[in-house]
Every structure is written in C-alpha cells, then in structure tokens.
Length: 290
Picture 1 (cartoon, one colour):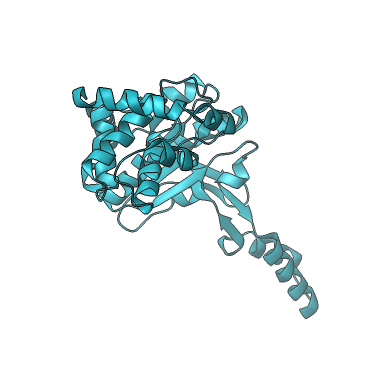
Picture 2 (spheres, rainbow, N blue to C red):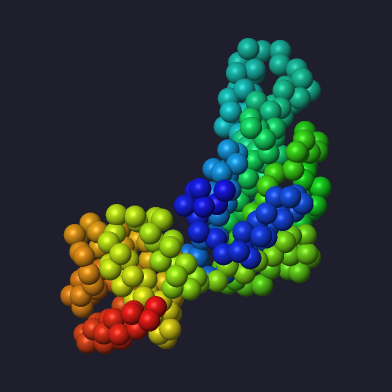
C-alpha cells in the first residue's frame, strides 16, 4: 500500500504501520525533520481512501484551538438582530447561540465526526512543539476518542480515527502519552533506500545524477552541521538540479544550489570554496562500491 503511494518504507516501519492499523492503536513516529514522518500519514490516507485531518502543533496550542471555537462574530450579529426585532427571549436566544450552527470545527473535533469512506487519518504533527498541559489533554482525548464541549456535551467518535503523532524530539514527550501508542524511530535511510526514494519521487533524474545526489547528501550528514539535511531536502535538491538541466554534480552547481539542502548560513559557509569539491571527490571515489 505504501509503495503504491511512492512511499519507500523499511520493513520495521511497514510492520509497525500494519500493526497500528490492525490493532487500532495510535502510532507515534519520532525522528529528525525531513525523514518522512508526515508523508507516511499522507500515504496511509491516500492508500486507504480516507480523509486526512492535520493538527499542526505549536507553542501555546490549547484545547479550544485544537477542538472547536465559538463563532463570536456570528453570535453577536444574531444577538443584535434579535434585539433589533424586539421582544427577544434571552433564554431561548442563549440556547440558539450555542448550537452547531455557531461552532467552528477544529481538527480534533473533525476527527471524531463520521466520515464518508470510513474513519479519517488524524495527523498530530510536531507534538514536541506544544506544552505539557496540551499533552495531558490529548492523553484524555486519545484514550476514549472523545472530546467535551461544555455547552454541547461529550462528542464520541463512532469509529476511532487512525492517529499518527510525530515529533522531531526538540523535547521529550511524556511517557504516559507514548505508552498509549506504538512507537517507531524514523532514521535517515541508508544509501540504497534513499536512492530508491529519490527514484520514486524524481523518476526523471538520470541514474548517475541520482546516485551522486544521494551519496553527497549522505556524506553531508557526517559533517558537523547545525541541521543535517533530510530526505525531503534530497528530493528538493534533485528537482532543483533537474530544473537547471544538470546531468551530474560539479563544485559550481553545488555552490549555486546549497540553499536547497542546507537551511542555515553557518552550514552553507562550511561548504564554500574548496570544501564542496573535496566532498564531491570523496563521494565519487566511494560511489563504485556503493
């Protein structure tokens, strides 16, 4: 199924995905940025024909932003309209204002709703960016697959969503949440698998260019960099090189396109001058044995 969506997974990753689907358990994926954690949720959703609902986490994210919020502007208009008409029944108006009509649905509530085609895939992306109070709330929501809105009551999912949580490990996620999930560390792929990924995502690249790109990026990951390039950067770089009609790497084209694979100026400066040529020469010596 994953291969059908051009997602090249290792056997351990494919196994844990299968088990998460089979057992109905949330799947917690941890690893460096750009190694395919988010992409696997997209591949699962497309492969199963399910809706993908994404909750992008950030510092300060709270339950209201994740579940639902009231449309205060629409509520105020309704109040003013009722007052202008005269004789507004305050109790009746209060009841009408706190109904589904004035509710703005956010990702967690949307994931609890019945969906055409079956339960959706709920992607809770970069959980490590949130605060611990939100983790505690999420623990409760994922335990029973339900959320509570004080004015409406508890809304329970008729069929639990397929939950994928990701973390770049900028901080440790609490053990209580991890215990609710199946866990997998998504590491950088080896040369053969990254080449396979690149060939799937950029099939128009010639074999020589693809091999040089993958070998060069793999070599860069052994350097002392602030941010090592992920698989996403490998794919982006290959597409940039194709747009420039490159058929092989050269020190000049590497220098011109470093912004596709390195995102910090300090890292880019390390590759300036003769350093890129030195790494490229080493890569070409190693390639025959790769």
